Length: 304
Image 1 (cartoon, rainbow, N blue to C red):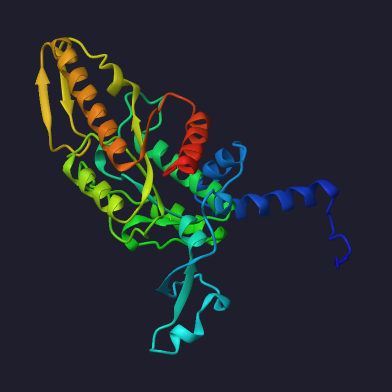
Image 2 (cartoon, rainbow, N blue to C red):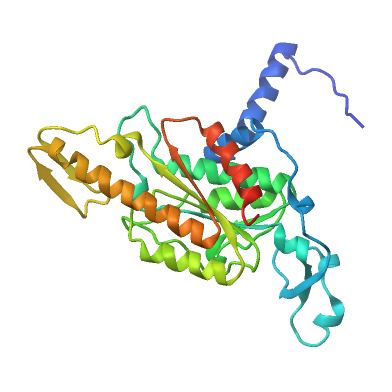
């Protein structure tokens, strides 16, 4: 039912429209810019078949787990909960299959852009991670962060929680992937430049494999990190300021650097193949839409 009122003195159709537009802009300003961009990007990518229609997933009982914030009361298994003081939810196999854990590297090394015209790696990684989360939540998935800080949940409110959590920076140059609290047979998405210490990543994927978890690694790089366009006198300095190297002949370092980068990519590829994960590379100068499309379909196929 609509309400009717008399026009105020001096009020015109144009002023009413302007007032409505102002209120809409004020409401929109409450949402983080990252969330707005992620929703726009997700909306530009067509959703395909997804979620519980994955082959081989049924309604067989899987496990009990403690009730989490966001669970509805009808999900509670009262018979199991009556055995103690804690309430439990009865999860089925398809619910586990619909759980996605996200980790975005928020270390200082990700806050790099070779030119002002390019986004920082962290900005692109956050955008892709949140946009992928938006798409999966719309498809009925439960999405959360690794490590248990933000457990997987459904619903629009979870998008806001994810956007808020992804806005935080880490002080260290490199942040190790968080491998705690991954549910068995869930899927995981890691976004990073993966240029830091390799052992923590190996450990994370080994733990994931032990729990039947599959997923995708998306390596996000600046074009300069791929091409090494430096020559002559150059100062190389880490974003966090902890490392610094000055050379008069940067061009002489190019081949050695490219060899090391190729070695790291080969190691990532071998690690993913051994764990049953998929590996993708995205350059910040390329289309975010194309990267999201690949990422979404790679997550669909992970573990298959």
